[in-house]
Image 1: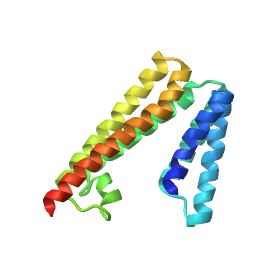
Image 2: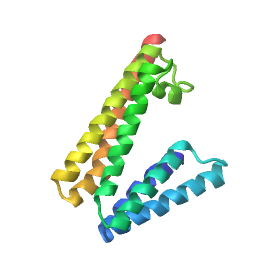
Image 3: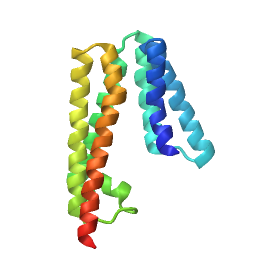
Image 4: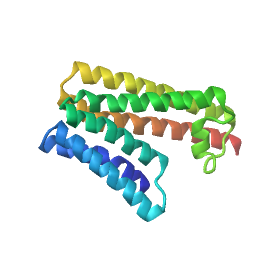
Amino acid sequence: MKQILNILPMFIFFIFYKFYDIFIASGSLIVISGLICIIHWIFYNEIDKISLFSFLSVFFFGSLTIFFHNSQFIKWKITIIYIIFSLVLLISQFFTRKPMIQRFLEKDIKISNIYWRKINFIWSLFFLFCAILNIYIAYYFSETIWVNFKVFGFTSLTFFLILITSIYINCKISKNK
């Protein structure tokens, strides 16, 4: 349920963009992200950090997009988020005992710390790659292509890396048995 709530804003943004424009879509993104925080509070008695961070970033960049009537703000939102994710993973990689990915998944998955570090590093590079790719697409392609890629391209890339990561983890778990 939580995962569906976390990806719902992206698809709402896409639908409103297709029927209206990027400014209405940005407004809908702000509203749905806020509603998701409320839903988290009602059903789980907490607002998880990812939903709160997502709402705050959407509110900030979406509001700037609407206020200045400039789509560049919403286009930069995802780049900045990807850079933050990459930096958080890299910092945890080199300056903490456990990489961030391990902290999220270790209660469900038991593999060696060295494998967690490899996975963490790959994901940090992935987010950096996505940040660069987003800027490239935002500046060198049409807004429609950017929206389509934001929704379907990044989602596909993320699911692909999840699949590769899952296969890698499964191989490491199998070797440990």
